[in-house]
Structures are given as C-alpha cells and as structure tokens.
Length: 128
Image (cartoon, rainbow, N blue to C red; front, side, top):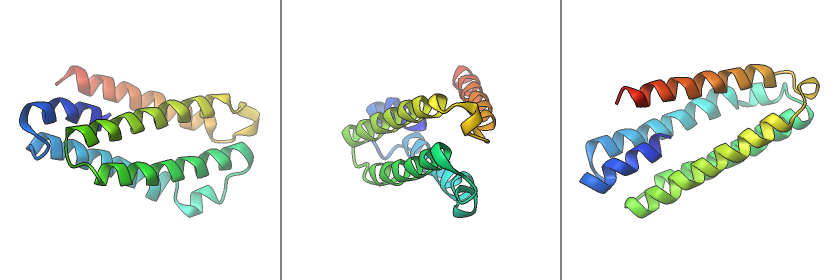
C-alpha cells in the first residue's frame, strides 16, 4: 500500500519528508474515491444481503482507517496505520471471496477490478 511504501522513506528522511507526505496523500485519496464513488449511498442502496453487509463493513473500516492515517505523527503511528490497512485488506479479500457469485451481483466485477488494481500496483512498484 501507499502507507507501507511511505514507511521506507519515513525511516530515512522522517515523517515530514516530501515522499512520505505524498504517500499519505495517496492513501487518503484512495479512501476518498472508495467512499465517495464505490461506497456512495446511492451505490450501496442498490446492494442486498452479503454484498450489502460487505459494503457496510468496508465503509466502517475505511472511516476507522482514515482516522488512523490522519493521526500519523511519527514512523511508529505510520507503521500502525499501514498494519491496519493491510489487515483490513486481507479481511476484505477473505470476505469478498467467500460470497458465492449467485449471492453477489457485482462480486465478479469487483474481483476483476481488484485483480487489475493489484497488477497495476505491482507494475508501479517494479518501476520505482
């Protein structure tokens, strides 16, 4: 994640380093997009059952993660936020993949978008 990548820079140059601040901003921007587009009320209102439960859970986790990110003051709190983000991602993936396709109208699309996102991140990392 952007936070995990930022930790490396924070250890070298401190939390106020330009690249660290950029990575924190990227993490917050990613949360904004998810909350305001993917998990916007008009989108989640269309969901039902396990899909709706996952969206509600994700929105709650996103808000808690936002608080952890905005509370970053040093390398230690950045590490805690990055660990939290990683844990949320792992739990989300487990929950998403456990929902049967027939119970989740958009899960196939979401899974594909996640695969594409992960591939983009790998490509970006290999270019650094």
